Image 1: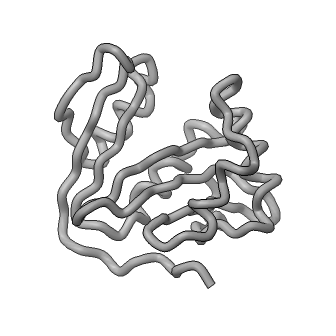
Image 2: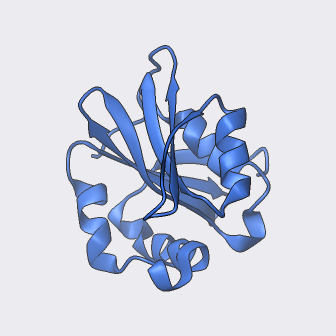
Length: 146
């Protein structure tokens, strides 16, 4: 990620970029435009977008859930992977407690989460997902939906 990259709250006018990044990140498991309605408009959701100049690099969607944030989805453009985009998005999350699920085969994401202070809590063999938690001091929240 370049020094000029910024993290901001995603908006409805970002939908084309979000769909493109999601398609690159998830392929057949990508989301459609309707799936973005809640994260982009409802209270309790935090949709973040990483940008550099005019380019969208990646996104993270989290949901507030009883005193912690749960990362629902995170995607990074293929050409921007390995440059700390997801790391910056995770570091921006304001909650003291964050839960994230990572597919078992995504060893890069697992290593990055552990490097950010997340610890493995459980493994769901059926979903092939590792659940990690991180607790830290409270941070100032990112800008809210306007």
